[in-house]
Length: 266
Image (cartoon, rainbow, N blue to C red):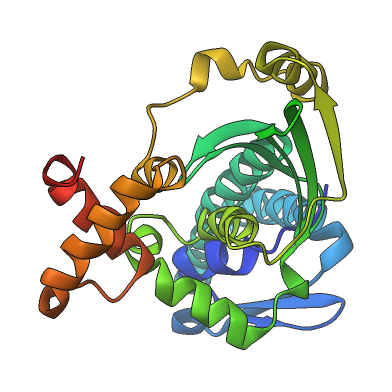
């Protein structure tokens, strides 16, 4: 099973201290002074083996010391093993669900419709339909989050801060990948042209098994801006200038502002 970029954040949410290295990850539980070192390539497999070993340890401890001479020590060891078993069970369950979610193509929409899945540790593959001069096209993307510089990532997260606040830590990486397409940080690896939108949607379904005719949402504010004619765009700019003191400072803030002011501009 692949090691995902979001694994360390999930481990932290589950109460572990995490030290991530090039080929391994060290997980620590400070309150019982416990740590394990896990190979990234075999991350889930190693955790499963450890869980099995603690299950066997719990059984062995339960059968130990029939005389009762060391019952206090046996009880302490049993409690320690049971605690680690429970913690690892919860962690494994959460990580397995994350892997299954990452493997599936799923459609979502922040500023435009996109179908995406995670294909490697920090890599995503995405399909997005778009209008072209001769009809329609499907743009295909390969996005590696490790290629985004730290300063650029901070800028993206700051501009869309409201969206990230509404997204859990694990899903924030997918959101970052989608937004990196929206702001054109990544260019499509190729574009395939079709005569009709139906043909483009059918192509995406053959590639991803996602039916975009079902998941398509209403137009977003950003799409409305893109389709404005010059007269309405002039009205929009005039309205913004008249209310410049109350202008938002982020991209998502502008979307909310537009939602509240749209009727007075069109």
